[in-house]
Length: 189
Image: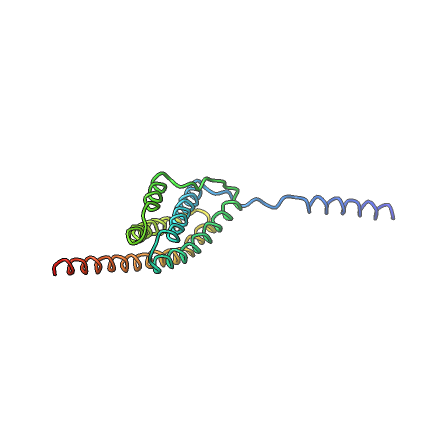
């Protein structure tokens, strides 16, 4: 009887060790469509984050700097979440910016003050609209329900970035129009 209990204890111990060291079940693999959505989203977010950082040194406008810092926090958070999602699904990719993204950033790096503010906010409107399109595509077309839900949830914030960018752009544009009218009036005297 002792022998049966000892044998049973050994078998239980071995099974316990085997089960505790078994790998966790792998997360679902991403389809090529989902991989493309993650990659496009990450590239656009990286481009926006890098561009937003330029406002710290190149802008003269408090409104532009505030917008950039606020949006940057959101972009960085979403970048981290997408990285985590990709890692959980065993997907490794390059988030390197595209050639057009590089040329846009370089163009902005050469500007300062009001000229930077206007070009920067125009770029932010355009790029956030592109980001929104990617998130809408992800909400409608992601095959992974987790990814689809993430895009849908984050889409609200991206819509706010578009609206806020347009508001600040219009402030900058109105300021430039007022400055131009003021100079014209001064020259007409």
